[in-house]
Amino acid sequence: MSEKETRRISKNFKREKDMPKLELHRRDYVSILGGDITTQELKHTLSPNYAPAKKCLLPSPYLTEKNIERRWRDLDNLSLKAELLDEHTQHQASAYQKNIENFIGTVKVPVGLAGPLRVNGLFAKDDFLIPLATTEAALVASYNRGSKLLTAAGGVSAMLLNEGVTRTPGFAFYGLAQAGQFVAWAVTQYDQFKQVGESTTAYGKLTDININIEGNHVYLVFEYLTGDASGQNMVTIATNAVFEYILAHTPVEPEYAFLDGNLSGDKKANTQTLRSVRGKKVTAEAHISAELIQKYLHTTPEKMMQFGQMTTVGGALSGAIGINAHYANALAALYIACGQDAACVAESAIGMTRMEVDKNGGLYASVTLPNLMLGTVGGGTGLPSQKACLDLMGLHGTGKSQALAEVCAALCLAGELSIVGAFCAGHFARAHHKLARK
Image (cartoon, rainbow, N blue to C red; front, side):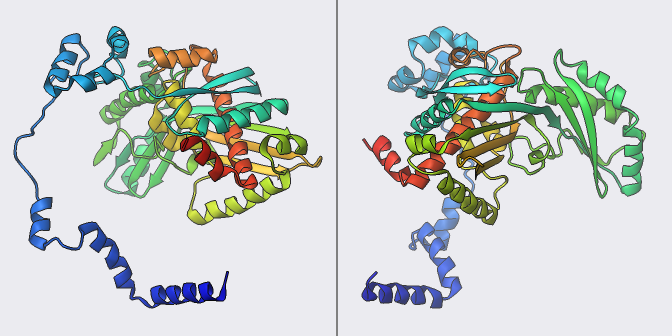
């Protein structure tokens, strides 16, 4: 850097530093408002508007041929109808009845394959070609590269560690004494709670109840096994039955109570599952030689370990829950392709990635994901396209959810290796430029 440039940067920095903080913050609001709107105009623009809505939906949300046609007639846009309600979608419309309200068609998301990815797991033991649904260029290519690297290294060792889905009703009492009395009663009711909850489902099993007292609030954490279903609806219905039983039989009436007290972590990133489980907890690892790292990623194990050390500190500084590069990319693409609840990526994408140089000079890499909310039955897994994606991997239906969880963890490991390798080799921006800006 020249002396002239250094002086210019220093001068600009001093100007920013000396500027009053109020002025720095004020600029944000001036830019938002355009700087030329009066207070009266602002008040008028943001005031409530009670005029009747210009467009309304049918009172009935159900999927019938008549309702679909009426919705499109109200929309009055034939060109958009052709994109969303094509002939094939119309033919399959009845398949969506249990998955959508106010149905008008389907959205087509591109699906690409990554692999082969060799998984040596307790439940998944095969070479998988994995369908990923995404609109992000370079994503499938990255997972494809990582998958081929891992397969060349002998595959991914994957182990399902634990399972469990929670729902957490909350109860408020007048004081701590009443809360204590309620807890003293509740801990004697496990068998009754289990019978009531399991009466609502053929597959769900109540396995544990934990209790958390916070002042005059009591949170009951109900944990279930949900078979091969992801299980959110299952545990909600089961816990609601127990919740109603509690309100009808408790010797200490709460001031108020709710079916969920937000302790379960449902669809929110949270720290508690890092040491426990919600959904399925899986860990996966691989030892990869320095030669394969150089061949596939064009870098070294040492540099990848250094990247991991720096980004772990960066993650801690940013307040991240867990440490990983981009689990969310793999999970969102796989969840959308395979009929999972995509909103669960918010909680599923936490976990730990580690990369170390092993005693042979190669790379040891592992991922642990404690919060994989996924299933191979129920939800969207039976829809035509989503079932096809699961069938491509041989993972649709009963007895396959544990294998899908191990494949999911292996896929995340492939993505971690690929993206870290790209940063270490200086290829990250170049790859996106090449594939996204053809």
